[in-house]
View 1 (cartoon, one colour):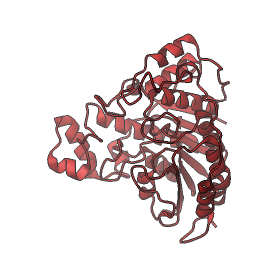
View 2 (tube, helix red, strand yellow; view 1 turned 135 degrees about the horizontal axis):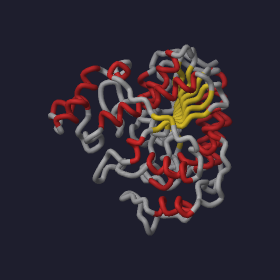
View 3 (cartoon, helix red, strand yellow; view 1 turned 90 degrees about the vertical axis):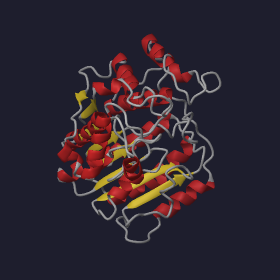
Length: 373
């Protein structure tokens, strides 16, 4: 099966600054680790940058114009801040914002076009799933997963499945396709966690399923949900294409969630989803621990491309990981040896709590305007 890795040199540097949770190395580390391991022998596919016409297929003209104006003028009026949610601590305006955000959208458009020919297109710089049509939200300005789905529909796909494995509910994507019977969204996320949406009974117009999970979800529980709920729902929908947002924040050690997955478990979940249809787009997403993010998304590419997972990282890769820094992770108390020595986490298996059986039963139960019987 053809596979593609889509990225850009723009991601070698971080866009955010100061104490923002995304002011850490993420994609740059993934690119360098993949190169050091020999997993990008021909380089990556240079990302397409979305045009204004592309962006206006989902985002409102005034919102796109506001982002461009704010970046150009290096200031945000109070009216713009209130209306578009930009220029805030959460969604700060910084130099290069428009280019980075439109590059993320373009990369997901490009990934969808490549996947539509058959195969898996990997775009870890994507996954900005909170972006709304007319305002920013949750560190996300433009919603690139929406554009991946729209592109697959434009390519002639009649049923596109979106699965969100980020620790936070994929609210922007669900809202974008409310009432669109050609698209089904499934989100597995931590309950009682921002953005406080995606409750178990939330099915949108029948084309959404939400699996809010309790704190400390382990690998056995995730495996159970995949086998007993996510994959059965997906197979009923019978997608022609799949888009996956694989945030790294469900991993144990992420400072902005309380889940406890290993990256090995997350890789297994993504790979199972790639077997559902001949076309798959795999995106990144959240992730605020630079060590777990770099290892997760590098290892995911290794799985997608069929490389053998190294038992130990080479010295240059260990040096790269040892040089990373994050204000949200205590270097002395929270660092783990495997974060700088290997790619694959040891599995975190455990008891499957009753709540997970209840979640699976609830999302499989009929009710409302169903797209899956």
